Length: 173
Image 1 (tube, rainbow, N blue to C red):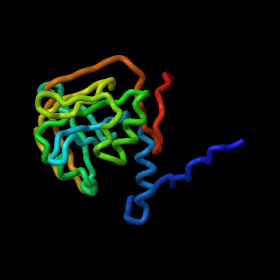
Image 2: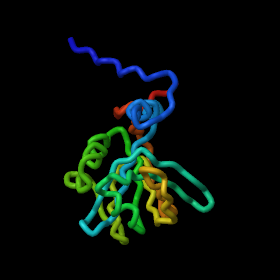
Image 3: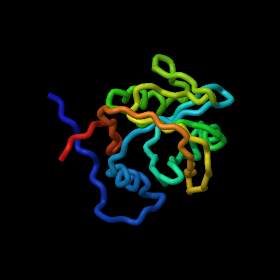
């Protein structure tokens, strides 16, 4: 019989510093989020990245944002992409998220196609936002990319969630 070990306890209160970056990361992980895969066309072909740093910004005009890490090998391709798509992933798509978390070219075996502008579009996600880049803002070790939504696709399904470093589902309270 195996038992899952409880996560390491976090301090109740602390001031973020270089010495306790893992505690800050753990505290931030207490915020449950959805999972997205962002895709763009690049000089190396179709490219994707898994991210949970997605948020709506404005309905009029329709703006969304996400935040890639500057340390990512895919950073330059995404901050220079004039068009990209943000895919909100369903519970059945955890394998896709895992694939793009480690490999930007993990399209093989997944249902996708390139739109007329060349952006890779993954099928069967909860929502997909096709975007044109509006702005890129410096934000410490990340950048904030703001996109104008030009097309939306959506369907009903169960969401994929991310909490405390793990994928999971949603259960109504």
